[in-house]
Length: 532
Image 1 (cartoon, rainbow, N blue to C red):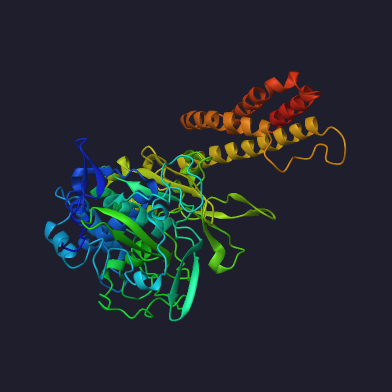
Image 2: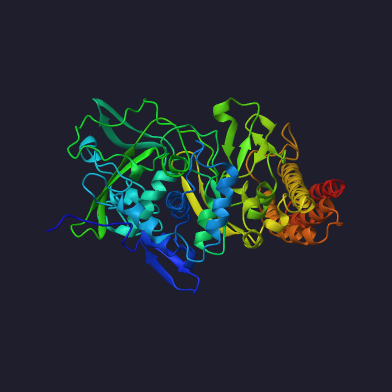
């Protein structure tokens, strides 16, 4: 029987949506060849789509020549002009360049020497396999209870190879920190992994009318700040020894190659190592090794993340990505995409109180002004979020899509961008005040005497939870109406929403709790005073 084989550049493993509405599965090669006919990726797992889009942008940069380093080959103006020229092409990427690139590298998911995005040394360096349930996000594994899934470690079911690729990508970008399979290298055994580079983040991607436009719009611009080093994606690294020494592996304490762009920046910062175990025919994955790849961090500013810049922190901790949060509506992040530079001096909460930070929009948005006018007018933003904690807990993932944003961009209409910011800040301030007065009112009713009377409780009270749930959907509707009416006072409009939300949330309590009416009336009065 021939060895298992699954060439990801040719096998149908990436679902896409064509402009004519047809959905189809394609390999990496065909995705680029047909990018000008494809509307968008159709991956059902948002974090896998976020990862796949980064890989495709890196591939697109290679085949289009937009991967030029700041070594004199291409100035920033020449690079922008080349991208505009490429966007004028009705036939997409050059097929010859696409085939030449994919023919140079190995894309087989089960190649014996270079399995795609995997490390074959794990078969000898790890004593135990992690199991296919550990590989697949959403399946219970180990001693965890199977609440919403029929899978158990006593009867692990294989996963199709295309879906195994999706989960492989998620582990590389959003993988967990903490306990993992023990890996022994050079006589040293370690069984703890570090979090993936995108863990718990919210990713923003410029979205064109076709995937071809999306990929070219998302290529990071060249910069002299990137190190003068050879830029390689993992599949572009030199082939390893086909018979590696078991002790030959990554030194967990060794310095890593510097992050260069776009290859290492978009595809080469994983801190996890994976090796898939295939079924004999290569159509399914039956088991997997999953462990650490490095204990070091490759610091870099991902071009699709909003960063909070804390000027008072050390350099290594100064830039912090905005976290994904399923309780936060997308419109509350809109002004961070519209404003250039560090225009937004937002306030953030920390464990020791309130500290200020500036907001830096994703680097991919800084060159949108160089795109052709018709593309700028149609450009939207695709958002991928994975709500996780810093360690192992995965809450939920989600995706969202904005309307065309260029009419509001600061470079196009500064007044519109400022209005968006003004309204968002007003909504945030009123929302924070709603939290405060509802917590205080709850405390006054449930603890009417003693030292703690009137102090906001540590846990979120039911009044506050209900008021939040009612306030933010109304605030979104108000936000959109305020953009159409620049003369309307934003704070008064959002305060009216907060008053309505608090009244609705506390109406049953008036007849159930002694002194509730008095406490609620005081809270409503405070909201009215805060509206001016």
